[in-house]
Image (cartoon, rainbow, N blue to C red):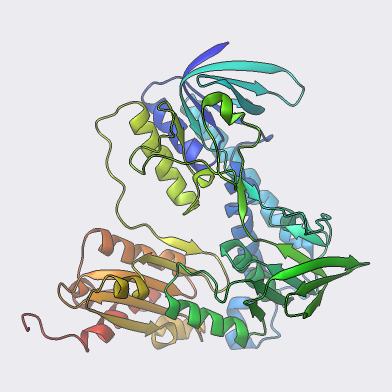
Length: 468
């Protein structure tokens, strides 16, 4: 039996950050990874592959240049699945190499195999060849991530009816695609394939999508999707999915039938906890396989020395927040008194086409709290940089307190949204006011200038400083 200070189950963002942080303090750390390479869902089936696919599509399709050269413009006339995979494979290889180097440099031990609890302190790891090794850990972090939810009524076949992992390994680009589920993953893939000129239908049982995003932003986003020909079917449940030859049929509860070449089911994910033998550690999961933590300040489970972080604990399920959760868990696990609290506001990025990013309160949240406020809007086409880039769409929305003039929320849809958001994030966390944007100089021409334009838009409707 191998004894260690910290055993991390899962090598994704949360596990990696916690393991390296503990190793920097001289702790003996082991990371268990059930797949053949480190990185977890983020590197192999989630964040990195889907974002690489997005960038490949935008480049090869000439999407960003169509405002100048017409909707028929393409960098490559016929884009194949092999074209999409080529860049993805190279990127993933580089990511794995970087992670392995980081683990080795910090003297973190990696063991490959499937982990399961023997008791609260002992974890057994079974390698692919059947060999077993037990580890006695003083502290354990569960960072196993998630996998796609696969309900029984969907006839997954790995060829025409796919989940969000399988869509990355298709042999042919379909002419038509039906995406079931308008969450973050569903919206991202639906818009990416739409940018390839695939005829996409997006189905969602709710009457709206991405309910945590400011509604005005979603209205603008929805308009852009409809304007380019995407079919949005909201408020309708799927009752049956079937396949005849190379054609799929998706039946809705209103008796409408969607005929398509391929179906992507992207409605929910399940925690990777089924093989952990949680009961032997004194733990349990919910109906989606997720673990419950006591609070965000510790990331402890109901068992004191066992922690959980990342997608396996649910919302917000972001690689960026997962890394911070892993770091905080490591600080608490080893009782470090130099821990610092995570900033109040973090950005949420949605890598759709166009991309969206949001930080702080939405207009709906501000209204619910009864805060007097004013909004400022900048359309990207109003900026010189937007004109240079040929941006016909895209907007930034800033929300300010009428009383304190502090920034309350920053919401962006359009090119570069996930990069631009960090200026708003910094001002939010530093409790900055409208004056920062109005009085500071921004590089010209840049899309960042939208902050000044949006702030001035709100300024024009705000009462003068010092007035009642």
